[in-house]
Image (cartoon, rainbow, N blue to C red; front, side):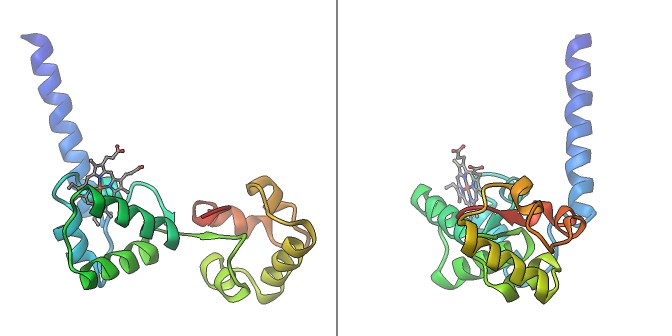
Length: 154
Ligand code: HEC
């Protein structure tokens, strides 16, 4: 009896926590949000969908996988969902990104973005964040700030 009461309390607390995450804007407004809620909210909460960031390619693959699992949307809806997820929950692959993409997504200067391109050309693929931080001429602080946005493949 006592245990059950505790369980109920815990459940209530986690529901409250997820509601407050919603209220605090876990899902930013923007084109595609409506479609995401409609197409992707049936089998699992959309909060679970956006729990981790992905590259544009990663989101495309994930949407394809969900369609194979039974998600139903028009091409237009799926395109809007992909754009919404990439804009708000995106990641940038620093091994394939262009200079301007890195400037925009990671807040780097043109010079810093060019330094990463040059490093890539000389050394090949950047393996991980530790290696990225060692690229000469790039602010490690700026990279640290955007760490969650950075991907090394896909
Ligand atoms: C027909 C049911 C269904 C619909 C609709 C659906 N999903 Fe899923 N989704 C699943 C299932 C089942 C899982 C759990 C897969 C697993 O654990 O391997 C999942 C898991 C996920 C994950 C987590 C995968 C991971 O590896 O972490 C993401 C991201 C995701 N879905 C995105 C979406 C998106 C985006 C949409 C809308 C386009 C969507 N889902 C619509 C069934 C669905």
